[in-house]
Length: 220
Ligand SMILES: Nc1ncnc2c1ncn2[C@@H]1O[C@H](COP(=O)(O)OP(=O)(O)O)[C@@H](O)[C@H]1O
Ligand SMILES: Nc1ccn([C@H]2C[C@H](O)[C@@H](COP(=O)(O)OP(=O)(O)O)O2)c(=O)n1
Image 1 (tube, rainbow, N blue to C red):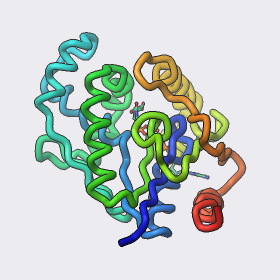
Image 2: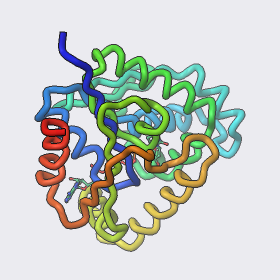
Image 3: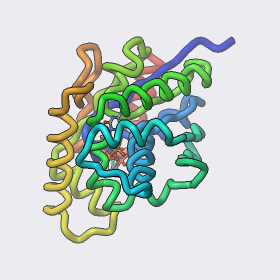
């Protein structure tokens, strides 16, 4: 049997977590779980159901009936909400603007954290998991914990290029707003775990970031 290898990648929006975590999982032959996609899929399903997202009790009640499924192939990650393939829909502006409010509801976090731990176990503890609270809450015993950061302007430029948006300043403001809500919520806010390694990707290519983390794992 292979030994367990859980790699936690946390950090703010646009720091490169998803692309880096996928690349690391592919290089190391591990599964890959995008927990942000789960919060986004939950938000998509709540919006579809017409749930009042200004009411945490309404969010908590509706969320309990929603079924999510995450595929963990780093070369083809998938996400379904109540049987619907929502991989594209969860990147829409309406979901992006609302997701931090859904992610702030403690019972939603409990529900999704339980699913994330189940996914780690189902994959034999051989997985790269990325999000905001993986090293601190979801997998505090992870073998490796990375906290990925980049300057706000670099993060906004990357995200704007990805979205095809010409307005990098508006993207930077939207990221800053989401970071603020994610960092100040009461339930497991975005924060670096004490034993995480900080990687600043501002002046690194994606390949360099992936190689840095692969080296950390292969030559600890
Ligand atoms: N080190 C890097 N240098 C340049 N661009 C990067 C780097 N890491 C990621 N990117 C790009 O930045 C964008 C956001 O990355 P993503 O992985 O989605 O970030 P996150 O998951 O943290 O929000 C993507 O288009 C990605 O290709
Ligand atoms: N483990 C996680 C993952 C994401 N979240 C929240 C915080 C983010 O605003 C949303 C969406 O996360 P996602 O990683 O998709 O965000 P970005 O790709 O960085 O824009 O979900 C969380 O609270 N906890």
